[in-house]
Image (cartoon, rainbow, N blue to C red; front, side):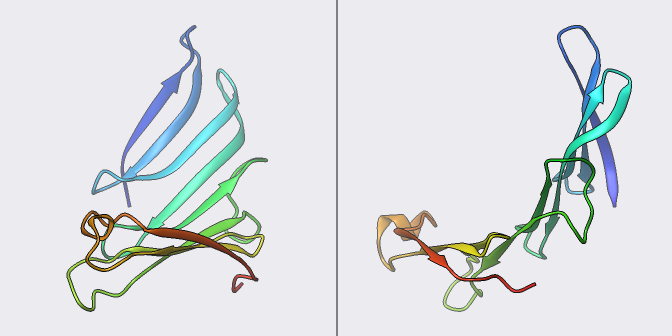
Length: 128
């Protein structure tokens, strides 16, 4: 549910973009337009969140409005809460099939800050 929308203007005061927020203040959509009066949508980013408030998926359309079927999506995968109260990003799954995995070294200062110790890429296909 969208609670608030914000509007952006260029230096001449022309309307250029909008942002939509959910009831928790998270940006759920950002949209740019081709003309000062709104015009056609030139690009759009849409985000969904999981129950912990983390980005679950992000769609980025660089050629117009978001379409849930055709717009490329990046999946965000998180660890379970087992062994602590953290749920950490463990994988980004890109539409090209490229994945970036995050590894956390237990007991390290990085781990205490929920900062990955290792980032690695694996070239295999994401699920549809």
